[in-house]
Amino acid sequence: GQQVMQIPQYQHVQEGEDFTTYCNSSTTLSNIQWYKQRPGGHPVFLIQLVKSGEVKKQKRLTFQFGEAKKNSSLHITATQTTDVGTYFCAGIAGGGNKLTFGTGTQLKVEL
Amino acid sequence: EAGVVQSPRYKIIEKKQPVAFWCNPISGHNTLYWYRQNLGQGPELLIRYENEEAVDDSQLPKDRFSAERLKGVDSTLKIQPAELGDSAVYLCASSSRTDQETQYFGPGTRLLVL
Image 1 (cartoon, each protein chain N blue to C red):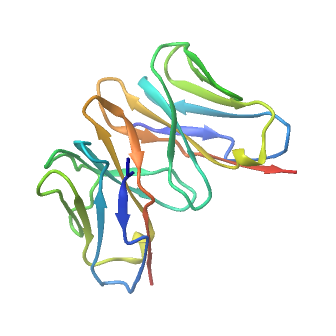
Image 2: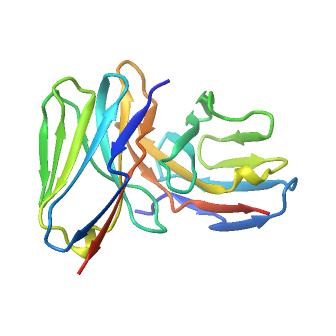
């Protein structure tokens, strides 16, 4: 079945440093979504990318969808303590409508 | 607008006992999802409803899990009997007909089976 892997599993940064998480799917995706889950909370939808090579920005967050539509990345510039949480990518395989979540990257930001 | 509502928020039971979780999706959302999230992992889909019809239950362990959404609004997920490995967070999500791909998650029910 479809597998979605993320690296790294964990990342500790100092406040102000940049952070990137990478997402790789075993199958071609029709779209990729990103969610943030705060400790003890539930996943919150951040963004959806649909087009090959698409790049979207939300303030300090930059999202990319790979040309082959099998990988994606989330980059946070100048992290803040409010960025703490686990970031999940989730993809829908081409032709289907089931969302498969990645393994997640847990981000910790230290002062 | 109220979000997805789930109850209870926490449940502790002994193994072999039954347990049920309830979800009320965002008003007007026709699609409802139940996910299970194990510690340190991403959510895994258990079942998806379009109105009252279960359109994807391929990941639901049917020997002990059951779900219903009789009137196409709120839904119940049941486990009977619960096993130790069922300890997890059970998340409900919903999406609308006009934006099927954006899922809104509820706060989840944290289940501990002893």
